[in-house]
Length: 358
Image (cartoon, rainbow, N blue to C red):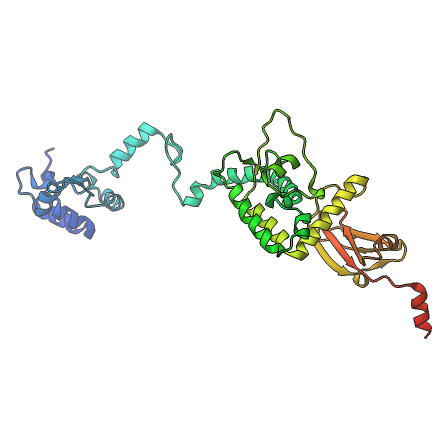
């Protein structure tokens, strides 16, 4: 049976049934199988023979993008495949033949899992795994950072190269001297300075601190030199800007400086007698004795702490009698590093009874 060649009227009726996008494309780039190889090319074919490929500009020599983007090529291929005329379109990576050959060559796999490939998506999705790894390392290093931060709390005088005795004997305004020491500490602990090491490596001994800070000496409460190897070269630690700023904020304020010196004295006394906590404590709260609840069964005053202990602060009348002259009792929490300053006024019982009768 001989095959009949489609007539022009049949091709025209077939073209009219196509979507407008395909009609417009085939009118501008008619296939050679229909118009013949000797047909006159259209103006669009003269400018861009294949609208699916890049071209080189003859004037500038630069690469020009295809007339149809990858997305528009895929849409044209899909419409032509549905109407059975995909073979009339130019060669494109979005074609069915190319996609089948690529699948045979690479096989079935998840997109982005090949060698040298990246998973597409938002930037936070692509960086999620390395970001979670950095967060995990930071959480593992957090106990060491907290320990170093609490240790440096005992060295606020050494950070600025000052001592409480220096501020007590100076004739001028102490805040001016503290400000000068703060600026000098920023310059001395600059990262570009030679001979500086990280704070987590070691802490300075009193001899090295006194030699590097000139006429300034460390206070007696700060003299807790760590054990060092004699062969290790003694170099000043590199304090961070935050640590220097915190030391300046504490020592520049008279009230905070007094609380800090009181905490150092308590820690030094506890270390010498072996009673109480030996670590440095931070965080002080002021209360009045009349505001605290009293346990009649145990004859003790108590108060809850922010750490969760309902009776974190606890003391009795004997503790108040030891500091009756000062009228101030500093109590540490049993479970955390917070402190409580209890203000009270000692009253003689005989005078109190006489005043009550009158």
